Length: 266
Length: 205
Image (cartoon, rainbow over all chains, first blue to last red):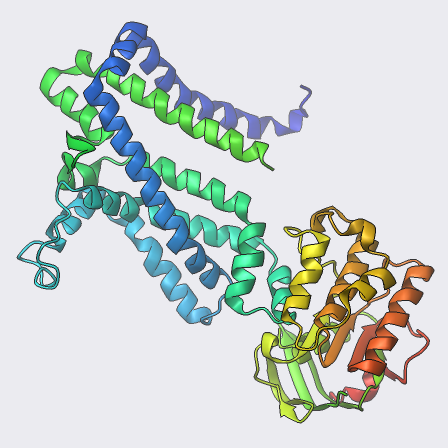
């Protein structure tokens, strides 16, 4: 590959960034070694944790797509006016600044007796429940979906929807039949980023869903990140290396595979 | 038959201000508004179509004040200068989209034949040439068959032969159904009732 020398100032940070991210990843896998990685993959409890994490992250991302796409579109097209658009845009991404342990505590107390809304839904609890897990993942990943999707719509010309409306379509019809199909690629890629964020969540889950029971599928199953932390706390570094490397491999392979598939469908 | 009255219409696109503009289009009349680039032809069309809010003035179509109505309730359509064939739909679906919203359905097959679109029907909207796209956009607007048709440079990217076909179809529409307002930077296109230089109806001081 021939590259113009003038671009060396850009290439150096590219190499530095790649090294910074991939040396720890490669070393993790190298130090863990194939034996401990294989034994992690044979651990039924660990696999159940991974299954729980992937399932809940997928559901949370699907909800983010369903709810977040129309909101991102509404904000991007400034339908509610500039000042309200700015207000809601900032409000809806502000959860990103909340430390995830605090997110866990907020959701923990949401439906407990100390909360005023407890009386409205007395039977509901997010603690150690599948719904709680999805709620926590949604809280930390949906704002990323929303802001990225808004930026995607900002870059997409409104011409087609506009002409759709000029041919008699309502705003909803123009959105469903024109804007969404024309941004399928963007929705998929932004959803993958949001999904990746959900998969990697730890802080809020440690507090809210230390384990999850959803009979008959999951019984006292820890989310994968909590499972790795638990192994580290109870059995020490050596015990956790295999699980860490295995989780790292699964997450990266799945994410990269999905990105490749999304590009192939272009 | 269509009757369009525009009174003291003003509009703006960012810091570009147009108007006040006053004009009338009688029943079944077609008018060609022409002028150089950057004098507000497109802004005028977009404002009449409802894609830009009017900052002043009134637009009355067939006796109804449409100045504040959303584009989909104005009984008019706009064919922009840029290609606007929906890329996610086939050409057939593009035409069907308009036909499904038509209040008075035209003969779709006749239009397809008039525009020689048979061979293109199964192509994706994003896979047609610029000239074909222009043809599809005009055919789609005719499928919608509204009371008023607004066209921005409808003959650009078209060969002479195709431009003649489009002009024929537009004239038939005008005689059978509604009014037509075309803006163009080309000074003369034949077959219109009136040719109006934009500066004659733009009363900006």
